[in-house]
Image 1 (spheres, helix red, strand yellow):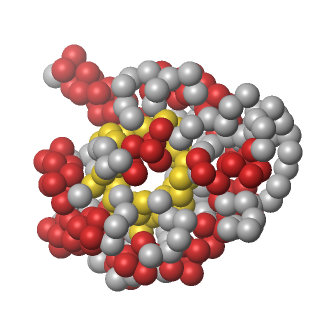
Image 2: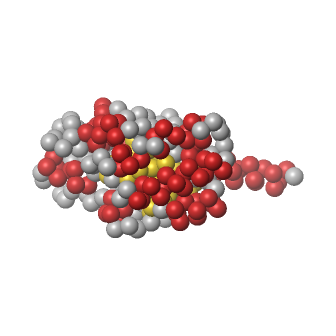
Image 3: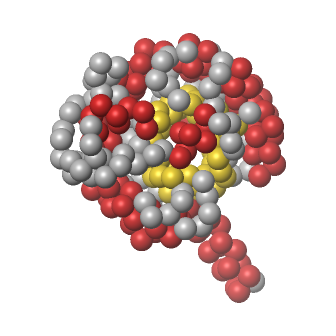
Length: 254
């Protein structure tokens, strides 16, 4: 059995825009439905949701037959949690709240096997197709994609240093936490926050790495893509559900 190719990592290397959606509802059937909607990637979020490790694996299995690539966000930059997510079959990881080059290096070590990293070795996991992928341990690093998330004003000052860490494949800006750190909690649309995000995207691209972003503001997303966002998440599953449900209620109840 062949080692699964990571089409998302390949697309970023080729400079092709990748449009994504956030998936935070912890249910495999829901992940499967989203995976069939036509997005290039979907983010299974186990940081700000109740998605557990077992559910992560079930959601990865449900999404796998579809062309949408599933990325997983762990709750923290924790080597044990990341190791278990990778063993469950994830090939792309978005590590939250990376503040420095040292923390980015820690994330790199968590996702890569030695000698490049410190990922723990297990022979019979879903990642290796339960031992059926020849030389999985020797080849897995090639298809692992590590994205790190900068989401504070302090982290933005470290973009160039973070992007220079060998093994980081992309840098993602989180506007919500950034807004809070800049003194505008709950207001990622504040002009100062928007300016900081756009500047950060440009600096990530100038540093030679793909840049990413999540926003629900369509106009701002266009500005972000123009500034260099290459893996761009355009909505959140729960936001879509509640937005449409509330609109239906308003339409029918007046």
